[in-house]
Image 1 (cartoon, rainbow, N blue to C red):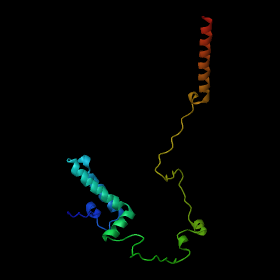
Image 2: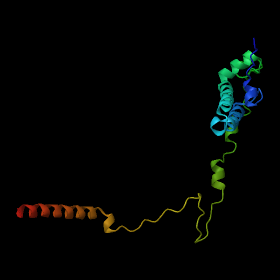
Image 3: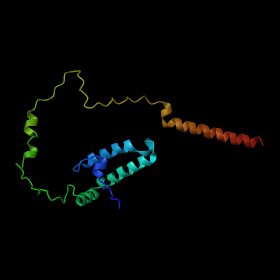
Length: 169
């Protein structure tokens, strides 16, 4: 009976056993670009390679599946259930006022010299936004009266056509 070759997703993706999820994702993307069946001749061989790459990705991308694989195959046990997990020790604050040490007091603000501009000096803009466009002067076409006059003209033409049509009969 033939012995089955053991499937190692870390070896398939070419990442170390303690690789971060970002390293695993980058390796999968790189290999998927290299071995995609649509990009290579011999679609059967490329499809088999891509299937193995996707199987490895399915195991290593899911934290629970990766943990189960590591437990079953003697890999590093990481995460919440790892035996080497150190206890969380809260650190006592050094001071209760450290958050406000950088702020200026009201007295500091009053004592600061005022900003003086020279006559005719244009203040520097604070952002890189383009200046607002100046509105163009409003004309008769832009007003609401233009619509009223146009509507009345069309209504008059329509009524005139109806009257002429009845008289011609």
